[in-house]
Image (cartoon, rainbow, N blue to C red):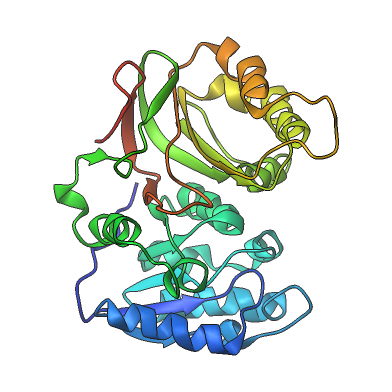
Length: 304
């Protein structure tokens, strides 16, 4: 895997909008938030784009990513928000350019589709972490900021991925495993199945999280991953945050815990949970594509 150079104060971060649109006032505030951290900032054209529920048409959104990776003056790239739209641009991304110009790339949620593509096609380590508008323009807590900065600026001195104080990493299935960390938002992972961008979990640690999905929906997506052998092929699992993933349509319903007990526990693979990564605050930044180990006996994630 390719590790991009770490960032330093004064480097330039490009902001892109590969998914849904952002109000113009929040674009301005996003730029200011990154400048406050000590970075120069270049705002991509897509951040001002509007095309229904998308931040501009597909060519604009993909072109922004390609330009940012190709621009020698840009040191890192952060997505402004998620929403929907990244699967539509996967075929328009210039992976050859990205392989030649590896850079820090940050985002989560709908950005998962791009993470998977960059990890697998470009062999680039990417960062599942906060986004400029969604997380940084208000309530940008100290832990989330420090976890991000440690990952993109001081990754070589960080050996263990830790939860914020008061949030204990828990064990669902005991045991130890290691492998490249892959995954992200469960809905987007499931959407890759059967496409050229299908997630490869063979011998890897699969991280999953989601928001606003009911237990039956999570059941359906995990079953899809199971039937496509993605769960069997993984060496272990990290379960992140499940924001508002409660039953609304069915009464009675299985709980999320019962779904995981049915579909994850019987695989008997090391599984840790309650990782504060996903649609939550505070938020851990994870390095996707990085080799890690998980210890389900002690509730630890170590970088390799």
